[in-house]
Image 1 (cartoon, rainbow, N blue to C red):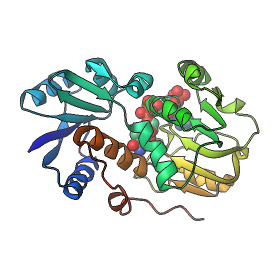
Image 2 (cartoon, protein in one colour):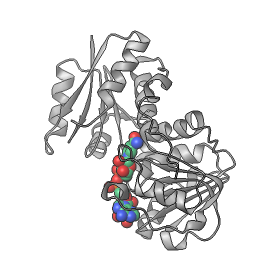
Image 3 (cartoon, helix red, strand yellow):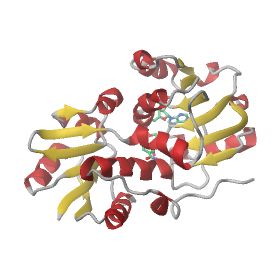
Length: 277
Ligand code: NDP
């Protein structure tokens, strides 16, 4: 039985063990997946102890994604771009670090929510770890335009500077909430933590194009202040981040086991019904 785990602080609330157990049952993989609460100053020791006990891989959550990045002996290109690691694999050649958050977001949008990004106008709110992880996969999806906006404009501009070379033909820009401008967007993604404090990012109502999707990476708060404000401002539909959670887990599962699980049976019971006002 191969052992995997989620490491974080806290971890008690996480749906990841149930998601991976469902994937393992569905694909017939002999594996276990547990929660490990690491002391705030004990991430590396906890990972090493798990490896010594025969552990094969870990998902990494708050607040250890940067420490996981520093610990990895090899990094995937997307982990390098994100500057953070949420998936560790342990092999004979050392510790491999990857980041599946952003690809999970894009997969949820494109495959589950039928929201193609190619040629579309995308507004990404926030400049923390979640936004950082999402930027390369969003640019790779080929939108016509990607604008990064953050409450603290300087942080958005600083973050965007790391990704300019990856933008290719995408019109990529960054700034504060007050200089988003009046151009509408087809997809507006909230990667801020405002929803944790029941707040909505202070953005103009004009950002929503007809038919626009408002997506909140936050999940478990139904519906968030951002999604309510989005509908009031003219967004046509909403989704929370539970699909991103399930899709990033599926990508980690693929890295570890070499098989991609079918996410639909796992996601459907977890998906919050769209907000209808
Ligand atoms: P960070 O702490 O790294 O970043 C926080 C960001 O939120 C900053 O850009 C900050 O702006 C902004 N912010 C905080 N409060 C407000 C507010 N009241 N109004 C406007 N902006 C605000 O957090 P993360 O990037 O790690 O996480 C962001 C969100 O994404 C969380 O809700 C998290 O749960 C979710 N998430 C979901 C995942 C999923 O699988 N669904 C995966 C990862 C994250 P400033 O710079 O101005 O302080």
